[in-house]
Structure formats: C-alpha cells, structure tokens
Amino acid sequence: MASPNSNEAYDFALFEPKRQQEAPREKSNIIELPQEKLEQNRRAKIKPLRAVSTFLAFGVMISIVGTMVYGQVQLTELTENLNAATKTLNESESVYTQLQMKSDSQLSLQTVENYATGKLGLKKIEQNQVEPISLSKGDKTQVVQSGEDENWLTSLWNSILQLLS
Image (cartoon, rainbow, N blue to C red; front, side, top):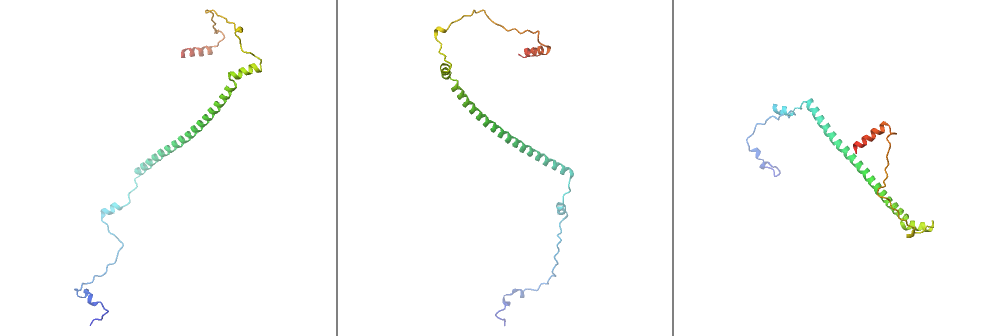
C-alpha cells in the first residue's frame, strides 16, 4: 500500500507512455541571421562627399544662428544707449525749462522796469518827449560788393553757389 505522505497517486506521468529522452543540446552564443539581415546591420561606409556636405550645412546653420545672436546683442546695446540718451535729453530739457523760467522771471518787464526806476533813476517816457520823424518813400540803401579783391577760388565758389541756388 502507498504511504500517506507520498504523491504517487497524483503523478499521471507514470501512466503515460515513455518517451525517448533527447540528449540536451549545448547552448551556443552564435545567432545565425539571413544574408539580407546581415547586409542591413552592417556598418555604413563613410562617404566623404556626404560628410563634407553635412559639415557645411551645420556650419551654415551655426553661422546663421551666430549672426542672429550677434544682431540681437547689438540691438540690445543700441537700445540701452538710446534709453540712456533719452534719459539725458529729458533731464537736459528739465534743466533748460528751469533755467528758462528763472531767466524769464529775472528779465521780466516788471523786473527791468523796477531796476531802471530804482537803481538807475530813470522815468517812464511821456508823450511830450516823443518826436515823430518821416522818411521819404524813395530812399533806399544797397550794399554793393566789389569783385576786384576776390581771387579765382572765391569767384569759382560763388559761381557754384549761384548755380545751386
């Protein structure tokens, strides 16, 4: 009789026909690939024309990017210079306005009148001090330049100015 601890009653392999045991194969690390897969996996040959054209393309792209970066740097510097000049201009305009107001206050008609009457002892003009004069309508003056004391370079310059005007 079978022992109670054995599992033989459940081992169905005992009732199956016996197979011939195959000899275990040795595992090899060699993988055989078809010829077309070998051709696909081979390392591509370096083509000099393709390498040079790729190098030139990268060179052109790098130079374009470098030019754009350089342009942006210059634009930033010019913008900073423009902002500084604008700030200086605004400050100068403010100083000019302050000085103009100070000058206007010192040279106002009332200030000049007070100075003339107070310090210089002058009086305002009265009607009896005014004498009208009249000029005849035919009197005119005209300045004529003599051409005798000019050298040839001055006369050439004057003729060019006359042509341009």
